[in-house]
Image (tube, rainbow, N blue to C red; front, top):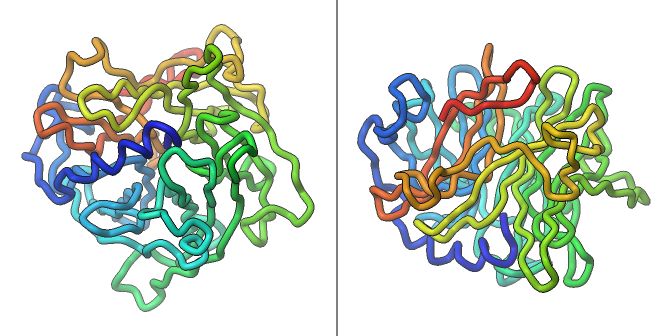
Length: 346
């Protein structure tokens, strides 16, 4: 999530109803055979979604702060159509609140199934601040009715302070083809970063300070360089880095969009279709409103990806021009073209 603009504007966005129900086929302007065309239920009050499935239940987690709940938002579905509220998994952990007393919610969770546990990385910060922390929590199951359901918090993974040059928010966990664990994160200052994780602890190995720069948004001196919400996904023999560009959280003025690059190494360099590097601002567009400000769904962005059985799905949020610019759950199937680049059926 954007540190300077997005977070500062999130407070205003939170005044929207978090429990409003949209009619079936909320994406009425989409083609009838798309996932978006059939969404209903608890769709609003959502920023920065990620998705996973346990058994026959799909789970979407997003940033907290809605309906007075500071912890990550959580909604579930059996069919990817009808979504219901599953309340928050936990609030702001004590250690994170002590580190950042002014924080009012947990940001941008990332969910994975790792070595028999569901692992949820999350960030805590405040609007426009480089003072940020990222930690993680685990549970054996996401089923609240199971006797094994219990979240255990594991504390700090990475933190940043003013002047450090990068920001510890918007984390994304990834285990590569060799079994090495990684954490991608970052926003604005310094762009998107990558660090190694210890496979046993889910944190950095003590003394390991190496960091890779994956993507950056160059800008004229004194101007903004909005890039955030990175997500790494493997397809074929490439790693794909998805990121969100421009501005979220401006309601109908939001011009957020998603683009990606790819690399045969998880550490990069990531390049677009023409071979231009993401470190120089290049990327292949995946989700974008065209024309800007002229459609129902404004500012599609901050995505998560999920391989579900025989297809790949991208989950994201967008602002609904027909419902008070409510930040709303959106889903699209991803297809891959002949050259191996993603196309969203949105």
